[in-house]
Image 1 (tube, each protein chain N blue to C red):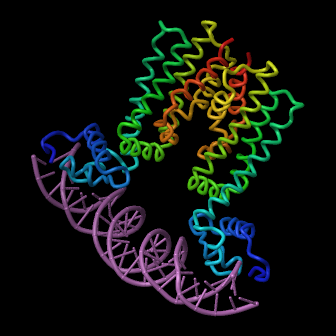
Image 2 (image 1 turned 135 degrees about the vertical axis):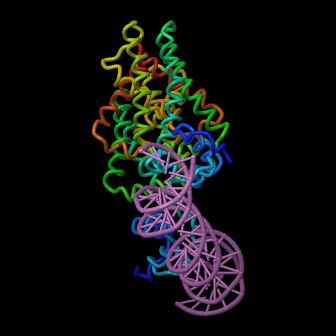
Length: 196
Length: 196
DNA sequence: GGAATGACAGATATTGAAATCTGTCATCTG
DNA sequence: CAGATGACAGATTTCAATATCTGTCATTCC
């Protein structure tokens, strides 16, 4: 099916795996399918990824990293004041998830399954995100806009308190009317709590 | 097995059902099992509960009501100041769930399954709980300890912000060291946000 | 010689037939 | 006659046979 003349790279395998996952879903996506999509034998896939689990983990990491990068941009907007950045960051996270879940529910379910299989990768991702939040909190403390004995502890608290608006387990509730108001009520309460 | 002389009441059926669920788990607990435990035919059970689902829903409601009652006691302790009551209420909810999940994981899993099957009963329960929280917030506003434009909206925000410490989906994390510190960090932030 | 292949063993998933369960109701019993 | 029974039809679950997949590796190919 695919041009068999091209060199087989990890990158090409990952792309094919994403496509197979999109098509067949996480339960039916096999490495034989991936090999077939690439026009190679499944043994060749195993030359690049030791196991099926390793292949899926690599796909998961790729996907999580895309989310992180988008949010890192907001952390870097140092011209905006910390409170605005905090609100923008939390809203961007929520809206990104909400749209993924709403626009393509099957793909979202696929990635939710992958995330469940790769809790180590997810934990790393979560640490990355709380690190970004901590950076905003730290900047806020420095600017006198926030109070916090320990920005990382505070960041974790803010992240956990907004779990309902980014944890995939709550995805059903993200489509209901009024969620954005509920989101704002929580964020307002947290921002008030952060002020000196 | 049970004395067949006694009158068959809904109450006795509910007790037997809880026992069967405890023994066999939610997947294998059948109404034939319940009937057998009571020494009656399964047709007799259907005289008191229209369907298996209705029977399970009744068991679920019973269980949820027990949680509500314990917490209602804290709301009623009007001699304590609102902030103390709020903290005590949230801690009691967390500790109750944490102990149920930790002490008898199988039973906890059983009730989590039942809760998933009966989202209407759960929604009612959640409304009940946020109502209790709203009552504490309202008292706090009246006493000048809290600010809130709308106690019910604020109560919902507080409840959702602490979801990680009462939503059964997070039960794994409740056993990890440091959760109580994380709980306190979130509650502190929220309480600060509530103060005028 | 480095990459790709495909046959293979053991693990996992699918399938369809048999067993069990749910919910009804005509019948029985005290 | 109010309440309990158990036979029954259709729905659901279980289980074992069958097919497919995962991961390895000796062999092939460029």
